[in-house]
Amino acid sequence: MKKTIIASALALSIAGGAAATSTSAMTMYKEPPFEAYKVDKGDTFYFIAKRYDLDYKELMKLNPNVDPYNMKVGSILRLKPENQNTTTTTSSQSSVSAYEQEVVKLVNAERAKAGLQPLQVDNEVSKTARLKSQDMHDNHYFDHNSPTYGSPFDMMKQFGITYKAAGENIAQGQQTPAEVMKAWMNSPGHKANILSSKYTHIGVGYVKDGNYWTQQFIGK
Image 1 (spheres, one colour):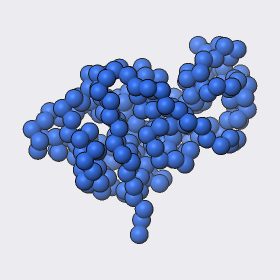
Image 2 (tube, rainbow, N blue to C red; image 1 turned 120 degrees about the vertical axis):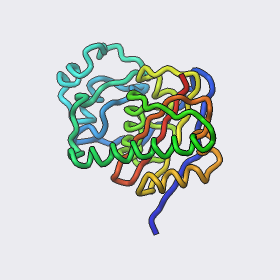
Image 3 (cartoon, rainbow, N blue to C red; image 1 turned 135 degrees about the vertical axis):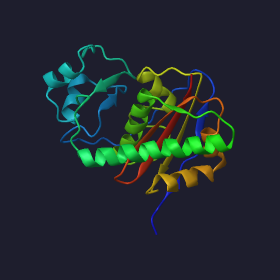
Image 4 (cartoon, rainbow, N blue to C red; image 1 turned 135 degrees about the horizontal axis):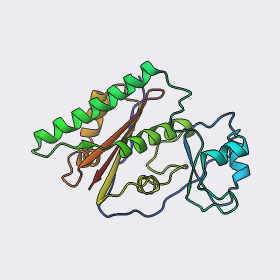
């Protein structure tokens, strides 16, 4: 029997969220497992480069606007060039994209049944949703609060996303868009996010390895 789980839904109806961060056991990497890193208390530029097996100068080139001697807790460092993808083939990229699009289609079908306006896909929210799913996969956790980005609301702010209302649904183990949507719609909290009239835009992120799903919603 395959394992499928969903977390409690998370929503915020104000333009902000309380900071929520956690830490994980220290791990050294042969290459960066994700695109970006959230600076934590006690971090140094040199240590971050060493932990992710990056050349110090290379890390500086990726983050030209960051002062390595005066980093602020909560700021985001880029670990990979934006167009770099070392783990996903072109064919699987299109497959994942199709799954994400299908989830949006199913969301809007449910909203239509409820007499609600369809949600528009937001490119920046799609980016953060994908990063969240990848982060859960890479760091072996399943929670709204990320050891890398903090809460979904912290994460959106870090990527310059503004909103009047925001929410997140996550799930793990479901193998198709239909399966994950069924699980979410059978959960009152997740269903409330999907059918909220406060939201106008959506982003969906899916990681095939482990079947990690993220829906992020915002109202503009």
